[in-house]
Image (cartoon, rainbow, N blue to C red):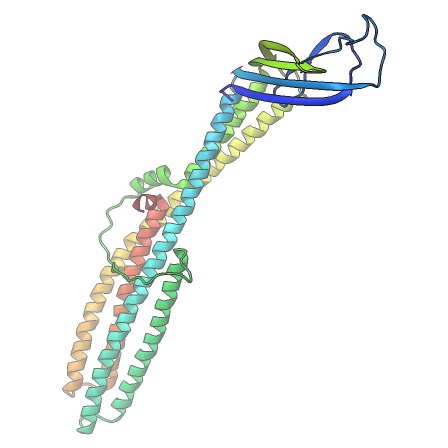
Length: 392
């Protein structure tokens, strides 16, 4: 509305032409009007105001231009409101993208974890087959009881069952990732290229919270909404003061062709002297809305701090879990190697070997689950701070 507004109109009417003496007025054309001159008694004598039902042609054509001059903030407030609403919509879109990125990350890491668990059970099957072969050879040589053969067969079948379950979990994880990427039912063939990894956490809570306050789209959206509410207050306050604009144009009118042409130029000022306290009510309502948004911002800031702190604590804890998982897995591997040697040497039974094998498989799977927990905690931290938007 800061730029000139131009409108044109053309009329044709078949109507009576009873005079109403000399007068001029603006027709209602929305926010703009065309001056109309009527009532010169036309074909009647001076002072003759008799009425007739006869109709004649009426033609009108016109062009009017209006330029806003000043309104004590209404137009500027409206522009600021629209800009803030646009920024809010963009922030909401970024929030959707941020949530989508987090969901895809979680699904991707879940697929990597499931893939590693499949490898764990495939390796377990290989080891169980070796143990079964050892048990069969030693049972035939009467070095071990025949029950060892059946125990190791059961262990092998159990490992095969776990493999089936883990492969199904991997397939489910891939379906979940395809869905998160919007490729359900039409995903191309792809392969996992990045293994699960980990590293030390060097982030600090104050830096992450500061980052979140500057990047979180939902927080930015509320701040934009608060700006829009403030702009609405400015608009309503302007109703206490006049609005000034300039108008100029051309209008042609007549009962026949060619029409009689007239031009005009002038200033128009409107001032709502009293509107039943409507302006005051609107301002109070807008202020209440602004305060509501401000309280929502404060509440969200607290939740952002909680989310960032929780994510950071989980991320830091996941590093300790991984370190313990590595130590446990290494010890289990050595235990399994010793148990296997003791079994072959006849110094232990198959139960000891079976227990060592189970512990190693469980600890190996726990290590990859710990890597998964680390990756998800890091992704959650990137989501809580909003910095994931800059990574993709």
